[in-house]
Each structure stands twice: as structure tokens, then as C-alpha cells.
Image 1 (tube, one colour):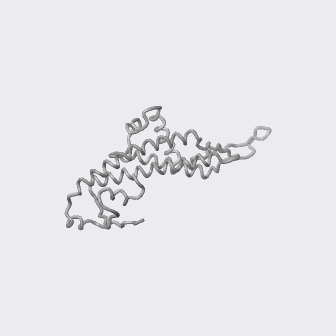
Image 2: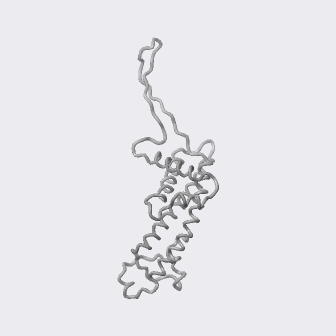
Image 3: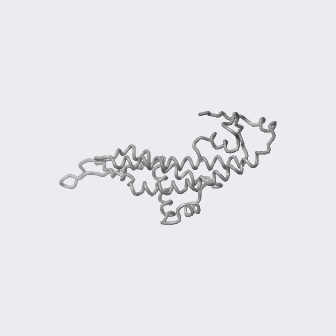
Length: 205
């Protein structure tokens, strides 16, 4: 799987293609979804690399950076398992990483995603309000207390990266197989029929 889509088609045509036509078939839609999930997992990996670096900063990591990058990693990871159909499944998890308690870890990741993406609750800090008593036990005022949630730790980050890497390898194989399947269905399409399809812009290096 390459980052440049135009490179993928050069296996079957000589040199860079001059024209690309949009395919809206079910097979093509599946291929798009596989590529989207692969890119999400690449984002998870990049986030984990960034987090490992940030968590090592002395005297302490930047909490804003850690929370922002970790939240992006959680959102990207969870999206790969959403929607059914050709989305990733728990069976894919155990196939990609057969050792360890990967399913329990996966459930924790999804729970963390809900925690960090909650539209109502502050994910980083819990606040409480109490009434302060004076020396005689009478109300003396109102106090606000807070409990800061800990930042993600390096072990969790590295485990996340390891699972994302394994799932990415699994998806890479599926993308290659699906790409071949799509091409087999269109390889005998006439020029007239191809020219009825919408054009896609081609970015030449």
C-alpha cells in the first residue's frame, strides 16, 4: 500500500496514467473504506510516536499536547471498528495479534474513546462543590475542589501502537486483494463506457 494512489495503478499501465475515472461500484466502495481505515491506523501510529516523545519531556509533558494527540489516536482507532460491513472486527484483532489479552485492551480503548469524546463531561478533570465549616461547625463559605485525571502512560501508548501496526499489516493485504478484484471487473470495459465515468484529477510527481 503506497501513500500515492496514482502509484498503485502503474502496475497495470505503463508509466503515469493520463486519465482516471471514478468508480462507484460496491467493490470500489469497499476499497475506499479499507484505505480509509488503513489511513486511520497510520494516524494512530503517528500519534503514538508523538506521544512517546512528548511523555519523555522533562520536567513534565505538555498536558494539552498529550490530551489532544491521545484523543485523536482514540478517535481514529475506534472509527476502524464502526459501521459494520467491512469494518474491522474483534476476530481481526485476534488474527492480527494472537498473543496477549488484546480483546480486553480493545474494550478499554473504546471506553476511553467514549470518555474523551463525551460531548457533555469534561474528560480531564472532575469538580466538586462543598460547604466549608468554621471552627464552630457553622457554614463558612463554599469551596470548589478538583481531581485531575492522569495523562496516558507510555506503556498504553506503545501497546496501542503495536496493535495499530498489526492491524495495518492485515489491512494492507486486504487492500491489495480488493484492488486486484476491482481491476478484474473493469479491465475489459470499453473506452466508450469508461469515458462516461466522471474524471478524477491526477497529481503528477
